[in-house]
Image 1: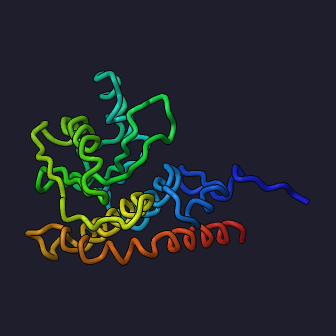
Image 2: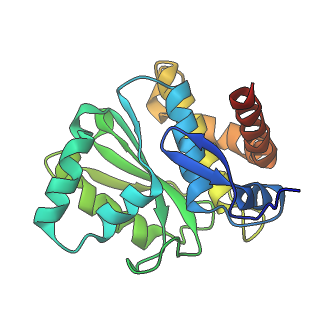
Length: 225
């Protein structure tokens, strides 16, 4: 009889490898880890295939924010071709220690929208990640604009009701913004995606864990056929 463990690989999707423990994280009231965040952002990139949208994995966003050497950062960012995208989506984590993998206690979302030449920070816990988001925006700004992009804190972002759903809200907001952009960004154009986020994210966040679990199980089933 085969032995299973939490470290067993259950799915390879694009560049993301999910393990059995990731299903447990999604099944219970747990803080989402880097792999789950990266998996769903990768999935959204296959749904919203426009080259104008870039969804940046957590590890890359973290390194951009915390890279200590400017020249190394230039070499690291160049292949990402950030200036080719009109909408850039960055997960933000409050970990500041480059020696600690998957550290940090809170997720939020930073979005750069080229038409407005602005960064928008969506935080589901009263702006807790504001410092980390501003640090990331300042690191990215020279590579997406002339370094003159505006930073905006989106204070009306829907708020989580517990201490562990920040990653769920990050993904819900990312999904709604990608849908807004893919639809042409014409609905409520003056307000950008803010109304859509306020109206859609709370309900979406309530069932997103189940949605992601269902997606993973479907992909596993398809690969086994």
